[in-house]
Image (cartoon, rainbow, N blue to C red; front, top):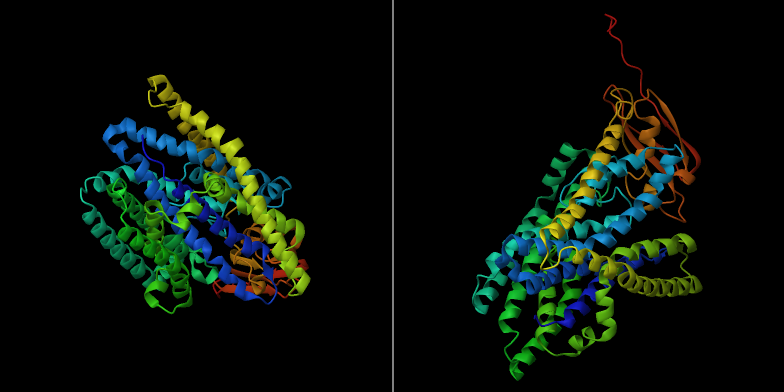
Length: 542
């Protein structure tokens, strides 16, 4: 029977709260002429690093022995993690697919964006959406299904960690000395930080290659979030696994020491290290985002905060302190148990609040007070909904799935569990393949005429680049000339309270690259003209 470490559960709440807090600030605290609030977005990066390092610590602490149980042990481990993640993940994904704008547009005959969403589902249903960089019209794979399910990139990354864990555990459990583990932790951090820094140093070369290979949408010039650079540095599991392995190593160090009594000197040292870890978080965050330290700035996408997070996790688990006492408290543990629901549902709730009450707040006393109260109430609502989701969705569904493959499972139970895991994915893959073929039909991607590269509604207001590409492509792609009517009711409002322009870039059949723009207030019937010069005819008539 393994010993529980409640403070780790409390830290899970801290991680989820930081992400929810940052996203709530972005959506609900959009106050005119007050850009300084953008610093409140920084906790999201800390929260994700805390999630990944803590995941490595907890997984290694609880499941390090599965590698000694052979294939059956590894299978039970993966099924346990699948049972933990999939029910809520599937629920959020279905919400985006069924209630998203794409399905509404499709059934009303406006565009075929829903088919694009369907063609991306095999990646999501198999937890691999974060493993690959792929473009679906104007969006990368991370963002193609909807705003809420875009958060599941981290779940895909976690699944990659779980599949890698048996190999990681085999190596780490062979270390027999805490001093060797400590040396490996320092070495691993140095190697991984150097790797991430060097990769960031080649951003221009990577961006040029991605733009050439995938197209303009993959480049930084059309926006950061959908770019290949953003994916490789932040969303992909291939760099984030450094944080997970650090957590596994940290867990091994804790396992060596957990039964050894804590002396007075060691406790004082531990409290000092805890304080250092906490203080270093805002300090390093400032250095990474302000460019004051070129090396730390190069680690802004990942690993910059990992050593500080490691200090906080280890000292909170090992040493009694006011921080550990707070993390061990009943509210923190309860919310820590619901941290997965907090993470998965918070964006859905705060965007619903913003849609119902307005987005941009005037810079005046009472509107700002209203924004602050709305912010606090929305975050509290997220916590309440998450507790309900954990109690009535997560726990029952996890128990049901875990019972299908208990430790003493019969061959029949094992086949049933594997079938429930694989068959829906196969069925979805077959269905989506048909939709994908329909999406790629010749009438959708014609060979001649206008080629729409990108279209953006509200670029002058800071809206996401390429947010209208699919709509313009549906209306104009392949035509000799096109007049596109800009309709806010169709496109939605990407930047409330701002007079938005409309801009499109396209290529003519002759190869000429052109642009067309409608000035501010384009959404109220503005007309975008996409024209090409007539083809030149030689004296021979060709």
